Length: 251
Ligand code: SAH
Image (cartoon, rainbow, N blue to C red; front, side, top):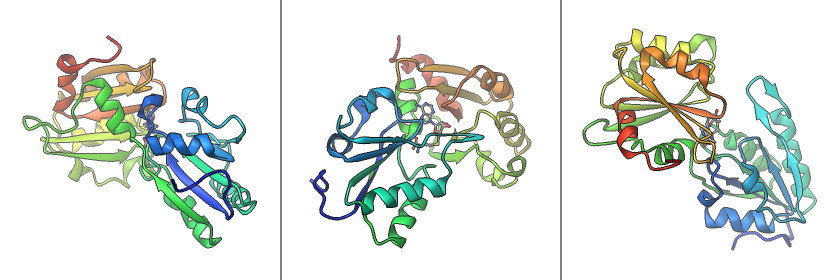
């Protein structure tokens, strides 16, 4: 075991908590949250997971929501450094995987600057967890030979995305943080060649008891997104049709 609460030196574990279902925590993540001195966590970490944390640990919520920056990133970085320098074992707990749209790299760079030792514990990212619980294989020999994870948190109406490289058949697209930008996503994918009837799905609060799966066509993406709440994942591609057949969860 790498880290315990009796650390003699500053140490931070950057830990992925998975998409919501506490049973999707890794064994290592569970062990670390049960022995941490300090847990710094955000909005995507489910209540059920927080209930598993060491009851003696100091809990610091630094939740972030699009357009509601509760705690600026620089301040989160400072909290990690300050707590670790008190020779505490700090667990930085993030939804999903810390290296997939999680700004994990930025937090680690600050630790490096302060010569603080760390480890990284991967988690099940939303794309894997939600697609599994929705019965949507991200690749399938008859549908998609590749899959791409894309942030929907776009600057300048999507000009920062290479749309021509996304608009292909036999390819699955998974948009994180895409609800607000659903009109931009729909418009660009259609403009760059995807058929308007390309099947798509939105998975809301995936892997939790409240999971909801909305399905439709690319031309309807905006209307589907308007019915969904965060956190939601958008999947575009013919694999989403398999949900009808392979859905097993929440039946
Ligand atoms: N590091 C995280 C992603 C953080 S970005 C990971 O690897 O999963 C936040 C986005 O992830 C949300 O806006 C949403 O698009 C997606 N997401 C995270 N958890 C989700 C869930 N349980 N259901 C649906 N989408 C989820």
